[in-house]
Image (cartoon, rainbow, N blue to C red; front, top):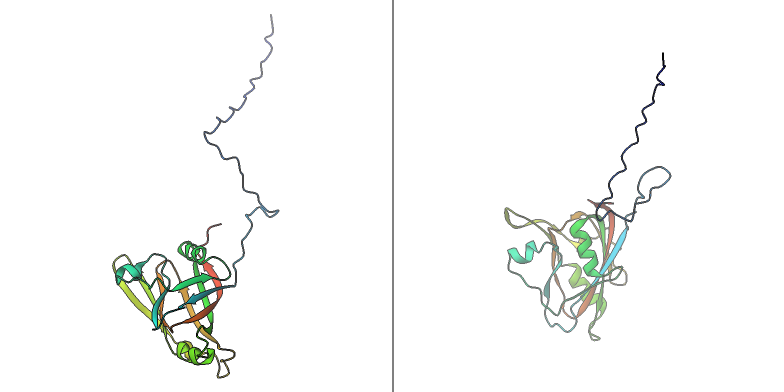
Length: 202
């Protein structure tokens, strides 16, 4: 009687089919197995110039979704120039569209561009002008959320070299517009102390 040798069945796993347009860059991971965490910048700054203007003008900062401008049919005076000091203003605006920013302190510095008017004269008038925070949504017109009063400041000794620092807890999203009147022929420098970014995708 012939003994049949037992045959072992070997299963070879199928090779995965090659992906069409498969990615060639694979994200690296840290030793802990997670993606690197990108830190949040704690500060960014802007300069708003009304050089050459003879009257105070309305300025709209941010408003990435243009809800305020479209809702009120508003166009900012083309003579108003907004410049990003820590990064390009357009980049800051684009980034806020995707990642909301939460801040608690703003610093304003006012520089007169008219040699006959001192910085202090313009600064005292500028600090007295409130900053209105508007928000928009798909189902309603832009609405006023609150008003920030720079002149209240943080303490009585706030005015130094035409600089004013004041506190306010505010979240800026793509729907948020900061609206204020700026004195003519001057520059206002905004320093924004950011506490967190909301909605960042790694």
